[in-house]
Image (cartoon, rainbow, N blue to C red; front, side):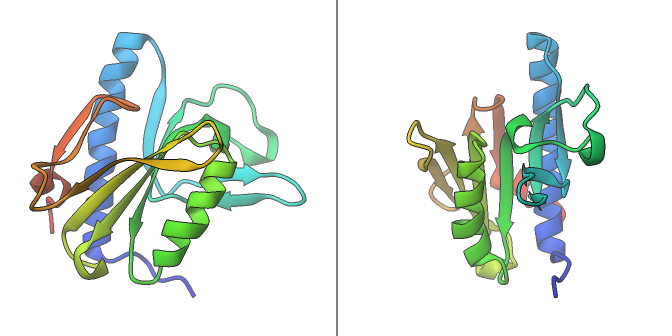
Amino acid sequence: RCERPTPSHQSIQVNLVVTFREAVKRADAKDETCHRAIADIDVLISEAPRFHFRSPDVVVYRCITEERGRWGDRPYASDCVLVVEIVSADSVTTDVRDKRAEYAAAGIPNYWIVRMTNNNGPAISVERLLLAYDGQYISQELCVRGRDFHAVDTATPSRLKLTWEQLDEGL
């Protein structure tokens, strides 16, 4: 049985989606590209031997303009530039080990892991992972509450600065 995320998890998720939407909108206008930032959308990891998909907490992907048959207008892993998982008490192993391996094997270039205090409180860390040439993720940066002013301060995949208070708004 899969329980719905806690209110803390959902608040952090919404704050990330809103922030990413603003960031990709600015980048797309400047670069004449098209990206979407959305929560809980199915991402196709593989089609064979059967459809295998994941639903990351937050996804930033290139806009879909062509017909995709059965998969419709949902993204393939190859469309994704970033996926984010917010770790909950019942998802630690899945988010930190299993999905990390699947997303890397699928070629998703950026994977962020957000941890919450006691798996249900305000965000305590944001780890930004980058896909290396060997097909494995390497830790690009680990921001920790109380040590770092910003929860996120990056130019990849879009210019983005986010304080801990902004990340936790609504908690």
